[in-house]
Length: 184
Image (cartoon, rainbow, N blue to C red):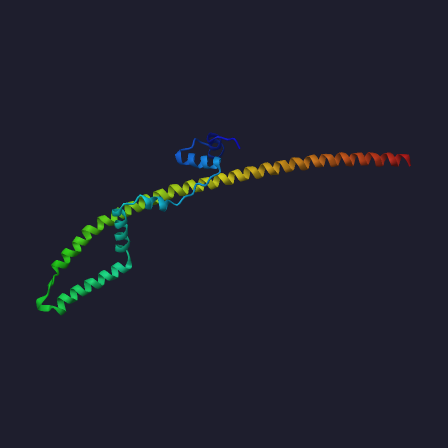
């Protein structure tokens, strides 16, 4: 199989390949795999801040965090309204609680947005990788179809030759039998 990438691109893609398609066609020529674990590559390049932002986003977007925070708010308000009544640490309308919630929201929102941006980048990398793997699978299937078609064609040619030989043998046998009938 001494083919070039251009020949494969013309045969299977019907156009000039771009960079990812070039890699796929090269791996087809070399008979190597193209699939890889993109999560390992991404995890290798993450900084401490990236991992921290992902952890905060994972925790902040969970039901356990929401339920724990609701419990905290109930404890805070009930503690300041009923339990402490006169000597309340943060009396109604809970200005200090409002300040804490605003600061948490001000810090948590950009961190979650950073994590979402990184997740979108991961999704783009995964989609590009999926495209390459799918293209490689399609090319391999097309190559298998070609091989099967060639095999089927050679078998048909072989059967045709055998039929011609059998027809010749039948013709000879028929000639021999007709000569024997004319003698008798």
